[in-house]
Structure formats: C-alpha cells, structure tokens
Image (cartoon, one colour):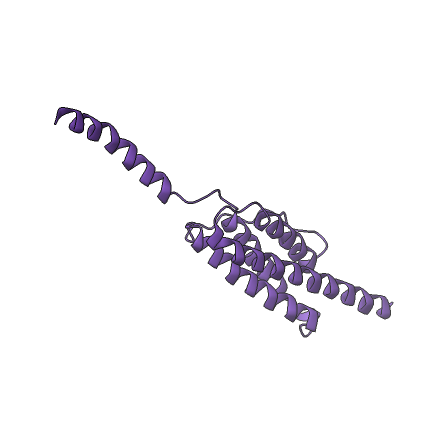
Length: 156
C-alpha cells in the first residue's frame, strides 16, 4: 500500500501542474494591441472635419472593413482566451499628413500585430479573416487618400 501512496503523492502534483499548463492560453499574437490600433483607425476614418464634406465611398468601405476586422480580431482574441477588457494605447504614432494617413499607419500596425504566429487552431481562421479585412481596409484608405489628392490637384 505504501508504494501506491508514494506514487500517488508524486504523481498528483505532476498531474495538477500538467492540467494547469493545459488551461493556459497559447502565445500572445497581440490581438489586444491590434484591436486598439483598429479602434483608433476607425475613429480616424469616421471623424471628418466639416470642410471635408461627405464621406467618400472608399472611406465608407475602409470603415466597414475596419469594423469587420475588429469583429474578427475580437473573436480570435476570445478564442485565444485574451482579456478583452484590457485596452492598451495604439502602437502607431499619429501621422502628420492627416487623419487618413494616421488610419493607414494604424492599419499597418494592426496588420503586423495580427500576422504574428498563432498556435491555437481555434483562433487561426478568425486571425486570417481579420488580416484579410485589415488589408481590404488599407487598400480602401489608400484609394481614399489618392482620391483626396486628385480633388486637391484639380482645385489648383
């Protein structure tokens, strides 16, 4: 009986530590930082000055894609057991060329955060979808910057 008790006394801490490690989430693919950058980019895109006039179609597309990226990144973060209540400041410094350039910088930072390796299979599909949405938002924001430049050039 003593050998069984001795083996159980040895195995129990090993079993408990193994179960605790199994519950720990995988490596942090920086979803929370990406979400901060995406929210800041959304704000930059959506908050136009009165002199900017109506929102252009490319800006609407960029805003919609950022919203979809936020949804996908939130789902990936939840699947990876990240603390969605933590809101660190955005990584990217504000651009001096205007709100759309700042949004582009923030979207690049979000893409870089989202593109880090993910070892949780439950989060990978949402991670890929979030990256695709960020890339679509980037392209739309870049088209909006180009359209704004063409309008400025035509005024001169």
